[in-house]
Image (cartoon, rainbow, N blue to C red; front, top):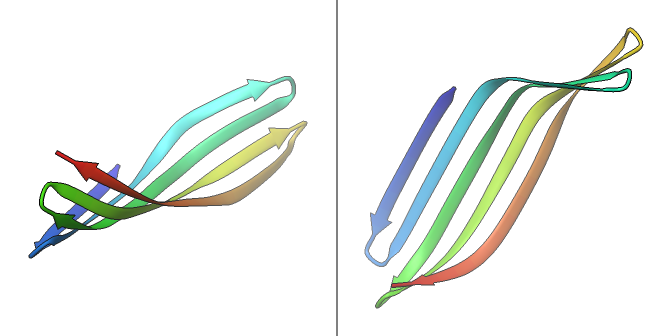
Amino acid sequence: MVKSATTGKFANSCSARKRNLQASAAEGTFAAYKFANPWFGTVRGRAGYAMNNVLLYVTGGLAYGGGRVDFLGASESQSHLGWTIAAASRSG
């Protein structure tokens, strides 16, 4: 597994980034199908602005990975990609 993270503060603003990539031995079987997820990774970021005890921020993420399906001797591999983005607030 490979991981890295960075954070930063600038006056009333903040930012953070996280990344990881890992190998996986995840496999499964259903009837004559055999599924595998040999690798996957994620990237996540967050940026915000603080006012008094309230933090307003935007966060987003990206997930990626490889998938493989075997069926009756035939095999197919594909890469997959997904993402999300959100805005939120936190107080405390």
